[in-house]
Image 1 (tube, rainbow, N blue to C red):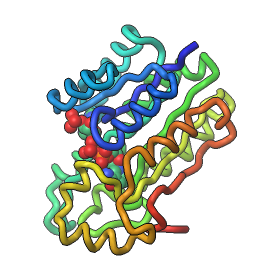
Image 2 (cartoon, helix red, strand yellow; image 1 turned 135 degrees about the vertical axis):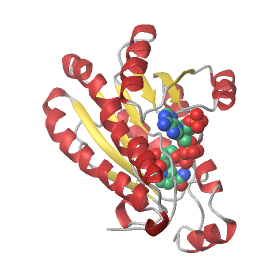
Image 3 (tube, helix red, strand yellow; image 1 turned 60 degrees about the horizontal axis):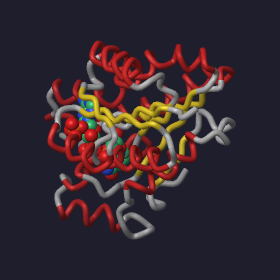
Length: 240
Ligand code: NDP
């Protein structure tokens, strides 16, 4: 039977590429988004993929959104926790609001989104959860104490949950992208971006589809022995 994948932030950037690659591979795909209705409408028009709007930073909205998707589309076999935001600022100037928004959207969302789908995955004896972290959660980045902390937390979450559900046929992995050519990176000032690219051994930004292809592999039926791991896809910028 066709498996169903839910991609958070699945209408733009990296999430969009993930949604498309899973659809092309034959999965039934549902894309969640936060508020950009115009982008979501255009996305559905171009791809035929259904979209569902709710904030992954809101626990109740996640529970209700997932229940709606499962009622309308079917049980979720694959969850890609991709939605993320930045609210940069040096620590001494960072507002509590900036801190909370980034922690809620990039980290607490993993709990809010994953818990409601786990029971079904356990019962069916199959599940794939892939969490999107960042090079800046591995190496740290000035101006991003909030984002670096949230993304570092994603790695701990992945490793702990992977151990809890391994015997139930559920794998949980992290992908840590480097700098990828999306709207998020387009917001970085040009001079700063030039400096970043000069530090990438491959000599360019990554493309969203280069992340999507790795996700496709992790979601496949032959990847059951890969769990609790992190794949860094960063053009060689950070190796460890
Ligand atoms: P984009 O800003 O291009 O797209 C973000 C997507 O997430 C949009 O679909 C947006 O919805 C959605 N989103 C944002 N907040 C929420 C929310 N509260 N609830 C539901 N959906 C939400 O981001 P990228 O594609 O660049 O990034 C995707 C992921 O990859 C993020 O987790 C990011 O941290 C990570 N990452 C990105 C890197 C990069 O270089 N681009 C590098 C490393 C990691 P809407 O359209 O409605 O706003």
